[in-house]
Picture (cartoon, one colour):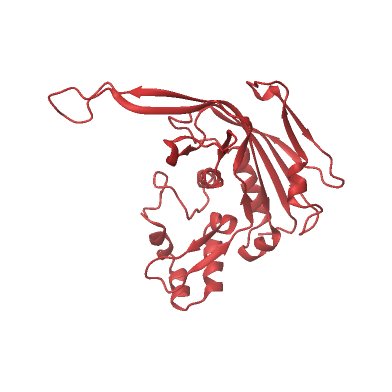
Length: 281
């Protein structure tokens, strides 16, 4: 594989319509909001979706969700212990070898990094990954609708009919969100993250919500609008990530936007650095 020899920045715009993009367990599973009322999707949730898409593409993933685990392992420790070279590196207290083997074995480890600190292991190893993703934030404050849901059958057998009330469901009526990220070449060299790996990450971003439907996020309720992909011409990059990300401007055209067409999306030109722009699939 060819090493990644140039910095990459990216931005992803997506829409949410009558869905809960990321529930907050500390707030009754309502869609996440910051103190100013803007919607949020955590970076952890976004990385979970990227991992799921990579798994759908047949890639080897270390942090698999329980409902998608396909290798029979019931924990991260079991998955790590199944790699004999890792166990030997742990016994030999060889951190560099441990990091190298883990990065080569799992794409999400060489992309996002991973902490390997399990009970009974000799080593505690932290791998820093080159791919960083910011939380997604909505362009406007979001409106949240809450509905009470009921059931029509008893959960267990009993003489009396159970209560109809089950709880509440919450959804974002409509919102446009954006998140940013970058790929660091220095860290890519350490984990062996390649140009091919970067292309796979790009593909997952374009198709992020495929095979991601649930009762909170029905098919079609979340949609990737555009992915902006800046490839610099050097390892350090021509511009800072902050400047690149600020070059994308998204502003509502009206007070209460109801579709992506109600937003004005512009790019401020950066000399010598033009992004590739991809429509969501």
